[in-house]
Length: 117
Image (cartoon, rainbow, N blue to C red; front, side, top):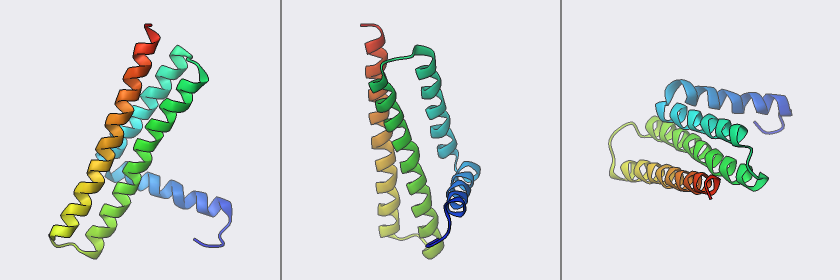
């Protein structure tokens, strides 16, 4: 990918997102969650800080799931057999996605509370 023009690099990135969309149910679910958050933001028109915080946390969840997918696919290709270290790496990545997802939900809950206060 080095020294390719911007459009070609953008194509690679979009291809990676497309593969994750086709092959990973969790990625689709988290992406739809981000669309839901965007719809809530459009409907409620909160202060700009809420737009920034909610989109940043939701985007982080989706981006982290892309990283999780990429590393898992690489590990499965390089080391298809069961191995303790492979399991630890995959579990840790899943834990990172879960941690960011819970954080995102808590931020969304704070947003909802702010709507009614």
